[in-house]
Image (cartoon, rainbow over all chains, first blue to last red; front, side, top):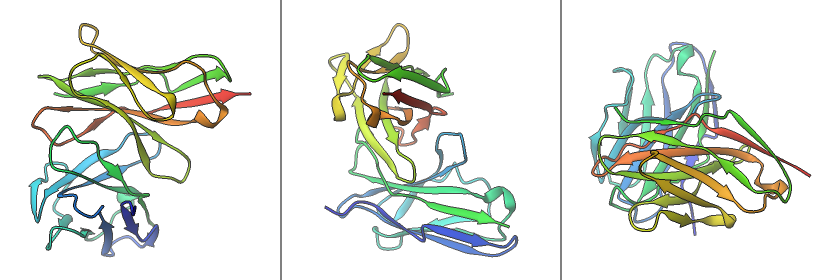
Length: 114
Length: 113
């Protein structure tokens, strides 16, 4: 079956620009997560959606980062006024409801801010 | 605060030998524990998890892990390593009722023929 997909796979932008990263979760998964992974590190939690609402956004580093999931399926992570420090691989995952359930990850979007 | 430690940046094992990738954790309550593998240019893949019950859990590709509550460890093991097991392995933990996964820094596993 179809897994989690993310687009684009690579994004190069200039400092100060706005970017949107898209995640298409596994059909029927109500929980969706965004993580950020820098080279040589484990993923860092950003935000968690249950359905359409952000249940936990405590990992968003500042107000330049925002994410939506308007219909409870596809999610978009939005970054305003990008900075070089935002360069990382942005990972999306989805799971069935329940904190004991494993998360299924997409391939990630590699964001490079020049 | 929750945390996960993977004390080895890299583990080298000869093909056919047993392998162990170490993980220790710190959580305030009872943990849910996970192992994931990451191959180059591919997404994280779930290997196995501990929720409750038997301390030895079996997962994909012949991997298993042992939950040790007294030592707060969840080491990943495989009886006989394959060259194709070479990858980056991540341990992750979450508190019951908390949806955030807290991740270790990863261990690079190299299996030499």
